[in-house]
Image 1: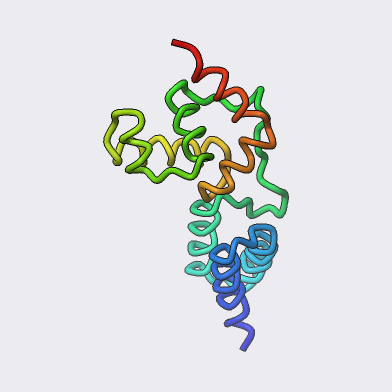
Image 2: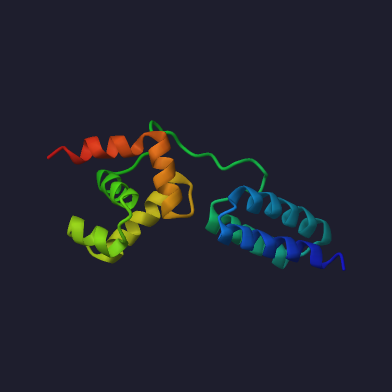
Amino acid sequence: PAALAPYTALRLAEARVAAGDRPGAQDTLVVAVAEATTLGAGLVLDGARALAERASLNLDGRPRARGTSGSIELTARERQVLQLIAEGLSNRQIGERLFISAKTASVHVSAILRKLGVATRTEAAMVAGASGLLAASARHADRP
């Protein structure tokens, strides 16, 4: 039935996010929102908005803006944490290295993901490397 189409699209978008296919997930979410709006499927709309928020996806079909090294404002501590994320350290290992708790490291990681507009640590490292943030982080880390 046509009423299942937006729900099915939402579930497919969730699966694509889980598989790391962010562009595909965003495209599918846009379809889910359009169909849910047409049918008045409020629960599917709510689910799509929640998924878009969690996965940092736009529902208007445009790619989510990602900053460049000049426009991303990370604190000095966040730059340190980002460097350690790029080295592949866990929150516990980051905490040990920086003499903070694993929970505090987790809070810093969450802030970094939000500021970079990404959903995973791997994406954060890739965006940081591509935008020059890792080189900037290394320079700042050398300062006393």
